[in-house]
Image (cartoon, rainbow, N blue to C red; front, side, top):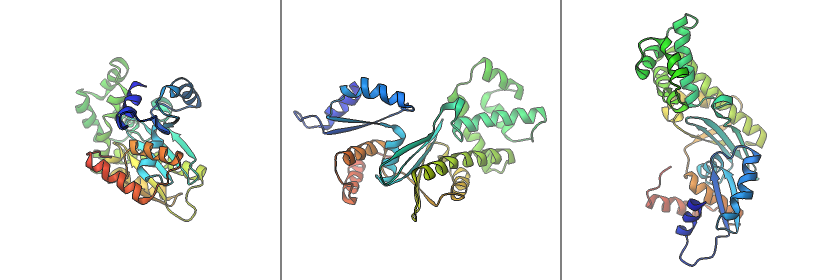
Length: 281
């Protein structure tokens, strides 16, 4: 609350009244209970007449599309997606954590790599260049040492996720096992788009804007191309780069809820201001 209120204070001229609307995008707002607790216990302490509590994926989406309807797919350490239609209805999809979800994420790719190496070691799966790459990354001499790394030393989610680039790099070089893992990841990420487009009624004669964010997509064509292909099986979509950063998305939500029309000129001025401040996506 101190950080949020300090940000509000710094954004206002001295002696200004509280703003009409503050939009707050927060990580971890995954269930109705999360929102109920924050809205009852924390929101009243924020210096604004109205406080809008949103999941951080929603502000990222609104920033990415500059307030237009669309979908955002986030694939970093974990994975999640969110969609918003022309009526302003927002739905999230995925993001259920590394045990129950996070399909197609860096963690998921890393875990699949470890499993593929052990399957090859057993003779239950094909040989793969991931074996050498994983052994070097973990500083081990035999694949069976992965067991100690995971179960005894307790590799963290981030440590397993850090193996994801080994998979995408091997896939780029044509390793069949790695390519299979990346293909499956792309399909699982595309499922988020399929589900959200149907639930929100997106499309209707115009392509759905789909923004992609996160380290998995930064691997480039090896991930993005199969993702596009799978999305296109069910949704007419255009894959876009985010136009504005998430914090700007929160501002746009505050504008919309405060009755400010999001004209092209307003968005362009916001872009120019962010560029002057050196703010990047």
